[in-house]
Figure 1 (cartoon, protein in one colour):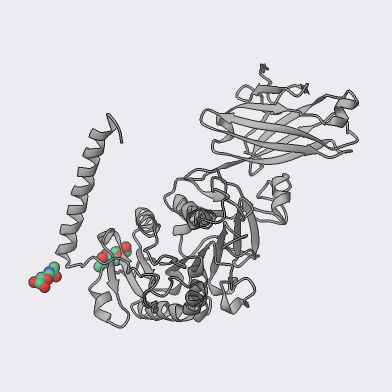
Figure 2 (figure 1 turned 180 degrees about the horizontal axis):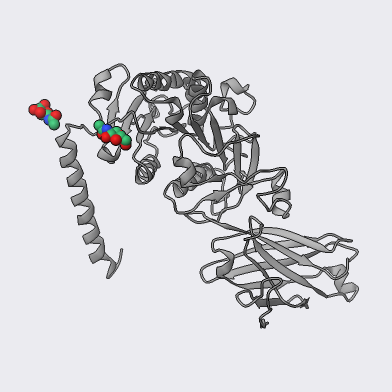
Length: 468
Ligand SMILES: *[C@@H]1O[C@H](CO)[C@@H](O)[C@H](O)[C@H]1NC(C)=O
Ligand SMILES: *[C@@H]1O[C@H](CO)[C@@H](O)[C@H](O)[C@H]1NC(C)=O
């Protein structure tokens, strides 16, 4: 922090300290002892040891150990059986450290709802050897199930339980759900682990039978994550393989884990209510990018599921899932990763004999995004889907370029004419849509900029538009 920011920084630090002191005093009032995650060493004896840390409104920053073997530990805690219960299960811990996202996730959940948030700490048992961690999953699940049995005896209902499992933790959540015959309300798998699970039968991994509603967010299916659908709804983010903003260097752990952890960061963005992430049902990501799956009201798909604060907190879930859906969506490269999807359509007055490509960039005040539209030979129209951090009403410019091809230069066809429209997805009666009011002519490999703010809505009056 530099210059004028530091005075404010100090002030903020003091404010934070005061709040912490207030919490500590409060915690003392009710005789809470704050506990944190265990840590383990790579070379230490790595026996499974499970610890449950409870966080509520009353002890947001002060984890309290609850133990199903010791009824008083729950009875004396701020656990409230009439409220929803969220159980967080982490995954493999290569270095034996506390998961860095736990505090953020607890804070986000308690910022959104007054629930019982239980963080399952199995750092000891998840460290050093991946295979050993995998072998510990059934016992870990057994311990979580014991805790839940105890909570049910206290009057907690099965549908008020929501398990959120990351990587290996997602499969542990699945096994727990299976032990309760799929009657648990909700399981969220954040990039469920792939290695050792992709070929496993459903009873050994997360699957739709494990809860009333099972969803999975896939962000690293070509490395740590599982590539097959495992829930009622499976979100494949940016296709599920590689995430924008993550380095493609594959040999450093911190870099490699970036795609995998994106599922967690996105989920936290949604819990905090910064934005919601709508998934579009589609057979493949390629078809999604090609603008083949743009609406949420088609006959084959009743609606588009979304990762949204209201749905994360709704228990039991209001969204009824009639069939299992594989859905796609894009994000931006930067936190909070929220994006608006735009359908871009370029139409020719008459078909050409070979495929042509047009480069398109959309610019708002704060960001720009680019893609290409291909129009196949013999076709009149090309489509593409683009993600942008701003909604269509804030997009100022569309920049179009037709790079041509050797063949087109040879034939002397270095320009194309056509019409161009951008629509915000999902398409529907109320969807925002902008079309350039006249036929555009792209020529000579140069960039043509059009003002989308003044471009008319189709059917409405056409404002003049400028080209520079
Ligand atoms: C906290 O613990 C102390 C000593 O163990 C006890 O005297 C006191 O009554 C307790 N306070 C509450 C609010 O339970
Ligand atoms: C438990 O939660 C319910 C519902 O929010 C609330 O009415 C009740 O007062 C809470 N009980 C305690 C002991 O805090």
